[in-house]
Amino acid sequence: MKIPILCILALACAILIAGCIEYVPTDQMPTPTPSVPLQNKTVTQTQVPRATATAYATPTQEPYPYALKIMGRFVFGSEEVRSIATVYRYRILNKYVWHNDEMGSDYTQQPSPGNKYLFIFLNIENIGRTRVYAPTEKSISVIWNGQTLHTDQNRNPDLLIRDLSTLKTFNGGGTVRDYGMKEKGVVEAEFVYPGTSNAYDGYLIYEVPLALNPEQTVIAINFNSNDAGYWVLRAA
Image (cartoon, rainbow, N blue to C red; front, top):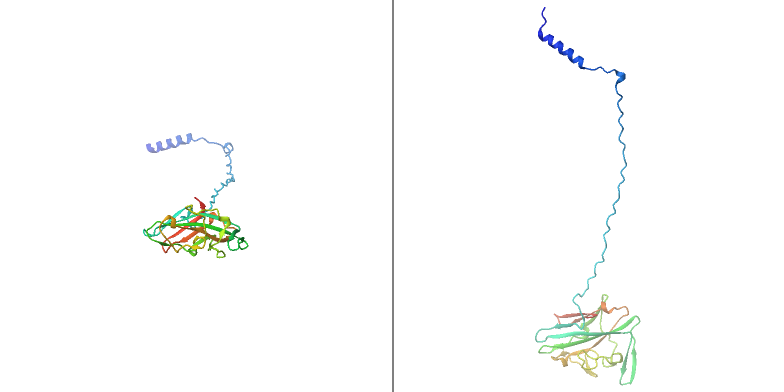
């Protein structure tokens, strides 16, 4: 009986492969190294402080940003009646002394409790070609701390105030008098005529609170339906 050649070759291959496998006894097998479980580490988060926004005070807007300062010149009117108004001085007195020529005596004028006196000196010059209406006392007011104050009516405009007797007019032409008084016993006309010598010049008296601060005080003058000027009591 002949054995096929293919069978012989297959048997030879099987023997060869078996001889290449090494037998390792069970008791000599290497002990596997146990795996070490990962430890949960606690991660500490560092708190980064937030930047604190710096608070800046909002600047207070002035109610009259275009107000002129003392000696500021305000031009009003058209070509024919063009004029210049100047608030050129102010004084604050806790009281004042006035002289009565008829009685030949001096008298002290006191304000109401908690008040003082504010004197505003105003000059109006007509540089046009025809007369112009002078602003009345009612159209000249003091504005402070939301209050609008008008001239003190408890006075005699024809009397000389001792505390102001050495003060001159804006153009230096004489002793300054109450607004609207040309000279003692002579009331100014309601019009201002062209020319420096015809200028309206004088002081107005206001009874104001003791707390009034000049640099926060505004003088408002309505000259006509179109023109209004404002001055803050602050040196230029």
